[in-house]
Length: 421
Image (cartoon, rainbow, N blue to C red; front, side, top):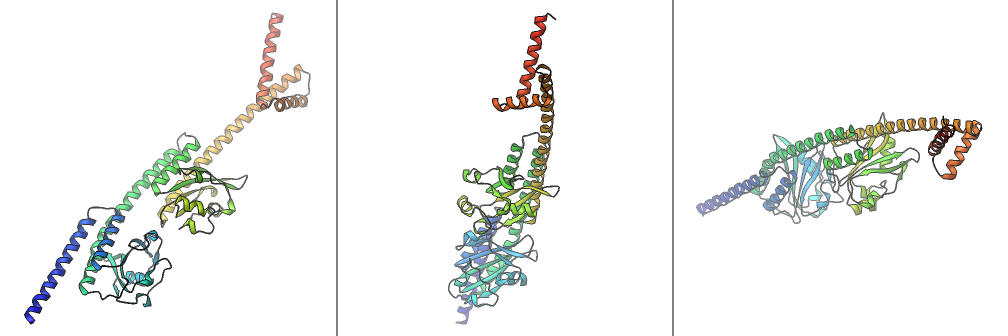
């Protein structure tokens, strides 16, 4: 009996090792074929569910600031909550596992554990069994995997060992994918900044400049909608000046008063504002339109010229997104360049207006002089005559002055022909 038991145990151990090698081989094969972070995370979750037969699996990654864990992938429940659920370092079981760098195994009544934290949007209290393991690479925690079962479950030692091995093995793949993702985004950001600078310094019309800026920014940020909204100093309203959105409803969105919107607050406070979900934000003016357009997270950045805000650049995402400090700085750089372009164009327009006004004044003076000589009018009478003709004929005073001078030249030429001089 003892010999048979020993053989049986050896066969069981061999099967477990074979299974472990097979799982690790499949993981290595699946995640080594891509550097797409989202694809890597999905592969990991699928594999954990297969190994543990879990009813649910949630994968959290450490934020760039390393102060919280963000839900980045899940199996079965709450796919819409990816990116929205965050857990502080050391908070709840997940945060505790990350901080202590050790796994937690709860065979039943998981929600009764004093470390358990209930999230309104996550039905985790419905699960009885719970195992949480840290994802590590180079002795550093980069995330946490949670596997959950609806019924009480005794996790076998080989299951736990395999789960811990998976968490350790995938840490490097996750970090590589994150680095690749960061490098790709940085390359795109540098290219976009270069293109924005080139566009701003070009001789294009300001409408074209702003349209190019929102198009390039939307591509760089992966935005659903990106728009430049300018402040009308006279009315105190914010109006859409440029957007790459194809939605007529969004393009025709009514102007809003500066004190009635998130954009207005960004202008007043001269600081970026981040809204995790505009459809649930009480201060967002058009939540119904946002829901219809499929808008979620918003980054609103003021356009500043010499500490004066002249408008904002808004970028919306269709999925929850945690905007990083780097995202905000990049958007602020683009916003400021756009503001400088607008300010430069405004100064040029004012300069042209002043030149135009000066030319009109010279024409009026010449026209008045002609009327004073030919009609024997005073300067005031001559001006009123030009003004009356402008109103009656619905022509500008410049057009009337030019017509008077032209008539005078024709009359003078006719006089010269009659006198033979």
